[in-house]
Image 1 (cartoon, one colour):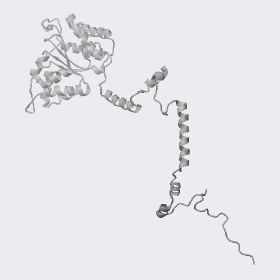
Image 2 (cartoon, rainbow, N blue to C red):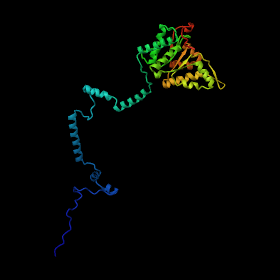
Image 3 (cartoon, one colour):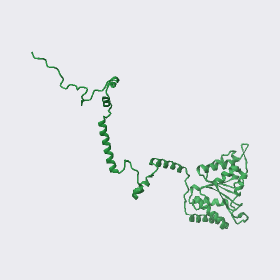
Image 4 (cartoon, rainbow, N blue to C red):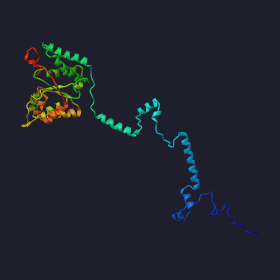
Length: 332
């Protein structure tokens, strides 16, 4: 009888001391992990052995050597050498807003903020036509009106010097001595032609046209009568919207009755005009027989300070033209 052959597996499991190319079965629980040797534990965790680590470091070293040889510096990212840039390169960097100190992100953020600040600035006025043309138009308005009334010219060279500056102001000429952003306060003696000056400017704004500077006219006396008749301050609502001439400032009554109460409409009017000027740049002009300093005693220090901030005082010279019946009676 032949002996029974032993059932030895074809690929026997290697002894623990021998290394196998086959992966070791992963531990199933914590107790098995604790029982593993450091070598097996590193293998399961993917930690390279010393030989693998050394090979990795040598590879990194060779990469770094090649990089340094190619770029000539140890750092991969190099700062821009502005001295070596071509003219086109410098122009391009200036166009995109490059700054050797500030980052592009900071520059863009700053530009955005400054843009918002600039948007708060009230837009300036553009000159609508050359002064020489406007001067001819104003003289034609003056002469045509006098001829229609069969009146003689009465303004002097000194008067026309003021007319020219006011004309520059209305057409937006930057050479005007009057700040273009301010309102006008034209003052002078009775009957010299202050109101008539504004009537000429109103015609100029209509015929050119200059829509932004067009205005309507009302005297303070007529305004007080309207408030008294309405028994409210509602008539002021239209004026505070801007583009008005308030004539004869300082010649009105201080108080009027509104439903039996004594009210000071001019205090409300000056403050409303001031707010419209500051917030929206609205134009409201004034004529008066009062020197500007006299207004403080009439309207109080607070209103006087606000008034001075929003107006430019312009003195209109001359003597009253009403003493000669051949001259135009321009102010009522």
